[in-house]
Length: 558
Image (cartoon, rainbow, N blue to C red; front, side, top):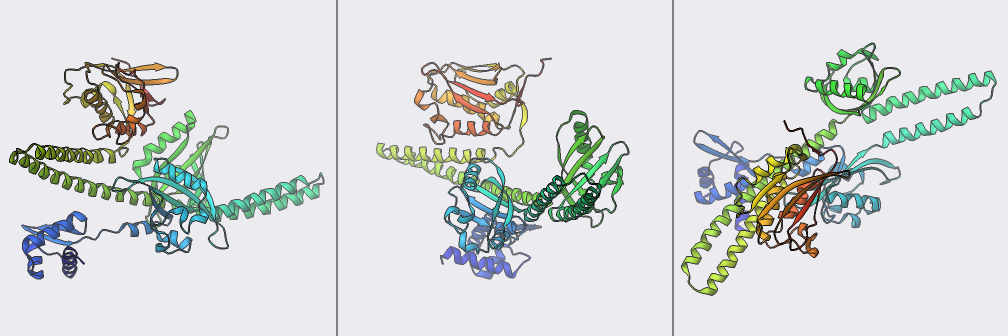
């Protein structure tokens, strides 16, 4: 064990003995180490999340952090969760997953999924979905596995992840739907049985009565199975009769809402829904009844029996002939808790990234100062040349660190309608255009984009000024055709060679950081935009941004 690890272990041990916290002086005295040494290790623990700081008057108390490890956080979820990195190595797995497949964590963690003990359960389709998740796509489908003698059915969801080092990964969530599938199979078998029985019926009244009796018994059995399935799958059916303003609930729906009975005034059921969701439900109902728009919403209820707050996903259809809205509610509280856990983990990762970037930039500032002093202390040409190369490397590192800050925020904020001319003007407000004139011919055009669209405009102009050689005019305009709308960016520089028209969007290509146009394409892809360069070499660049239908509008100019 190194000296640093030994000192950290001693500090952790002493903080564990004093859970109410110790000052730097107290740690220094108890461990017989210098105050600067104690301060250095405590501050390092603070940055790493191992310790927390509380101020009592002028005293600063350090105590051990009580953050929950990610492994424990994953194990709080009832769903099966598997975390993979970009090379398809298994990074993490929760306890429900290990129990379902009778595995130990050390059996699979750190191995490629197709070479692990999970390989018999992984199909080509699964691998393809995981690889698509690495590219930012989400996939959902059903699968059946047989880890033992009995088959188990899962709804598999593959989602993209980004780790704290900005590398991509994939999360695999398995929801056990075995009970629902077994019920579905039983129901299908029952339907086949009844159909076969009905085909064989004859015109004899006695036989028809007998068949109806059997059908009634079968229906009763099916209703009993449906009740059991509703309880297992946490869903319930409901009907809203608009004429009488009453709601009829199945037993599953009654259990969700914490009420007893079959028919209720709509106001009674509505009162169980948290008030903040009332406008959403009213609007969704109007849209369904008046415009036949899809009714697929999420809201929260407070169950009166135990006070629990549940997250509900509600789907419904409207029967115009009867004036009845038929719907099904699903308790998605577990999914919401898992999603919130992932979001909290993401925030912690982003905070750590921010602290790390800040520390690196501080060190780069110090390094730049030393480089500047080195230049002044030597007149040797070879030394100056080496120092100049060091300065370029430091500057490249600084730009790359700034890029990681921009890239990790892509897609975190919901898209908004933005006016093109206003965003271009804002993006270039502090840019030295080196004498080039800016022409904006977009009128009132608005695009539905990520707010980082401002960086798209800034990077396009920066690319022209850096590499256009003799740019005098930069133009933003758009074309509207039957195929849709295209936003066009042009300059009158030297253009881009044919062989580089696609390479310029690749990460790392170029003379500087190589991230500018790569970042442009990534930001645009968030809302389904695409970009290509189709200018004539020697006559300037022409970037065409294809805007999907529904993501652009041209308000009237008042």
